[in-house]
Amino acid sequence: MFPDFILLASASPRRHEILDQLGIAHGVLRVPPPEGEDEPRLPGEAAADYVRRTARDKARQALAWLAGGGRPDPVPEAWPRDWMRAPILCADTTVILDGDVLGKPADADDAAAMLRRLSGRTHHVHTAVVLAADGRLLEACQISQVGFQELSDADIRQYCASGEPFGKAGSYAIQGRAAAFITHLSGSHSGVMGLPAHETAQLLRSLAIRR
Image (cartoon, rainbow, N blue to C red; front, side, top):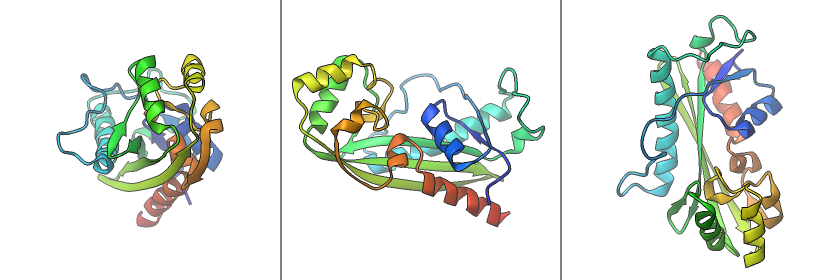
């Protein structure tokens, strides 16, 4: 059993679609990002720890924004009257290769450099999920292995020209044209997209049990 209604604190259309696929009633909460560098990695922080901390930070930012009077403008009529009491779901997805975090590319050159690193190799995708409810944070993390074929310079140029790498961790979207690059996947397809369906459902069910 899932909660009657949750808030998804993410602008990702993929995460919204995965919740729709699972039949989880939700509203999208667009929390203004903090000023400065986008999701900075702390000095000496392990890549695997980074993604978990970032997901927790997003949940805390959403809670603080609501506590400070932040609201959607306007609040959708379909939301329940007590929507501010709904659990808040946050997630962060990170591509990790050789212990390095491959984040969102700054430009086409940056995207091409990441894709050259991924070419012909297997990397890991960590997606951390955090559910803020009843004054506590519930967490899960899903790790997938993704293998890429060898990419030619032409492959990389054409893919960057499509615009798809931008705004994507690791400079690719498995649900888009980059699906043609994937030689194998061990783990969760939805996790690589940005929200692991199984782990998310388990968190929401555990919340219902705890209540």
